[in-house]
Length: 89
Image (tube, rainbow, N blue to C red; front, side, top):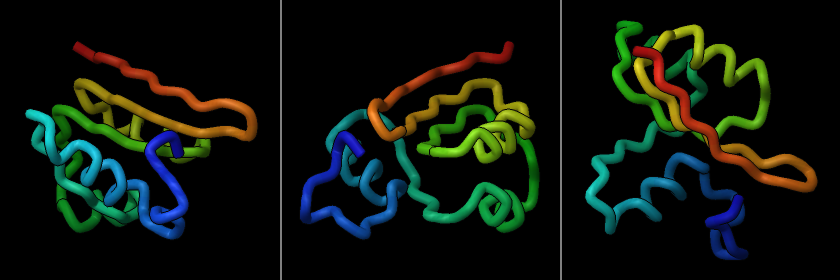
């Protein structure tokens, strides 16, 4: 949680990221749901770009399985953090 301080304890990653990116030119929508819940509410599996913050390989595979054209993923582990991006053209 590179963006988090004491005031953000308990805040969802989705809300934290959307708040941090509010002052940028990015158009961000926070969806504090599991991937399965989000897809079920959305009603389709067509994704152009996806930005996620996932900590488990199973969750990352679920998003990749939806075959978005572009994915940005951020994660934390016990002694490190990471950000990756993947394009599928």
